[in-house]
Image (cartoon, rainbow, N blue to C red; front, side, top):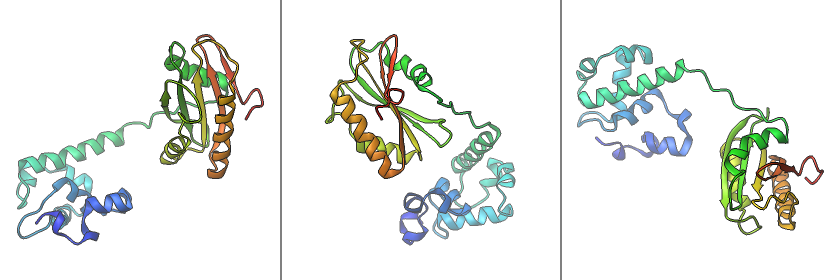
Length: 225
C-alpha cells in the first residue's frame, strides 16, 4: 500500500511539508525512509511494527543487521541498507561538535569576512550577512551582481532570507570597483529602505559597508543608518 493512498493526515511526506519535521512521530520518520509498505501494511504500519520489535529505541534498531531487517515483510536488502544508512548518519551527526559561528563585533570584522569575495571584483555586487542575537554569522549570501540601485536590490528577498534563517540582525555590503568610498544617493536610499523595513520585522540593520580593494566605508560608523 503506497503512502499516497493513506488519509492525508497520515502521509508522512505531506505532513513534513505542512507541519515540519518535529510534528512527525518516530514511525512516520521511518516510513519516509521505507517509502512503501506491502499489500497487508502501509509504510507507517510497517514502521510501527519494526520499532515495536526494538522497544521503540533507535539505538537498538541501529544494532540490527541487514539480514535482521530483511526478516520483516516488505523490507528487502536495499530498504534495510537505506534504514541503517540513515541511522548511521544520525549517529555520526550526534558525535560531531556543532561548529562555532564567527562573531562580528565591528566593521573591520565584516570587511575581513567579505573582502576576499568582493575586493577585487570589476563589477558591483551586493552581499548580506545574517546574524543571530549574539551577532554570530548564520549565513552570508550574494544577492545581486552588476550594479546597485533601487530596482536591482530586492528588499523582499533580503528579508525573506533573514526570516528563513531566524536572523535578528543584518549587515549589507557592496563594492565600488572604482575605489571611491563615497556613498551615492542610491546607496543612501537603499540603506534607508532596508533599515525601515527591518524595524517593521524587528530585524535590525547593523551596518552597510562599501568595500574597495584596500579599504571600506561603514554607514554605521559614519552615523548614516
